[in-house]
Image (cartoon, rainbow, N blue to C red; front, side, top):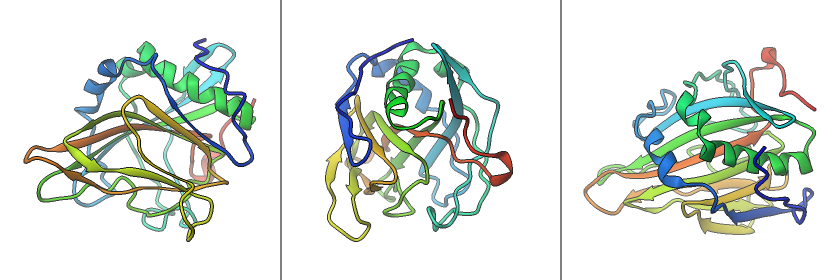
Length: 231
């Protein structure tokens, strides 16, 4: 098991944490974003996505069978109540030490704040061109409906914008506002903060990209598939 940190200072009731995970070699992860499939549920062909689920059993990271994604309209006014299918993460990515370090790091917080032993990992690329903005959060300021959320930044190339905000109240001022640089990991309790990431704009005539892993504990499943597994 890769215990990268023991985040005992994290307050599960009303806190967030931003850390730089220097142990992860980003260059090993970047190529896996180049061939992500387009998200078929959004118009514009600017977001690309894979999704996998993992269970932590002792010191083992176990990839779970394929599951769908589901959020109610309470949390997602654009794609709520839609059962969504996304391809699984590349097996070579899942097997890489650097990817596993990110999952284990996030699970340290899950252990502190929940009794779930399951983590969903969304691999997401948002692109921007001279003709089109990229919108990482088309649903606006929102919650996901999980216990814990983590956003790990892998790459930002040829873009400006994409600032991530955390709001204690949906119509209030943000408690946190920052562009997440590659290697930075933001973790927060979903029930304490609404979150949002502003659109990205290309800074050159070339395609700009923002690559992140979004991790949740537990995952989000259709009602008939049940909730995530607990310890």
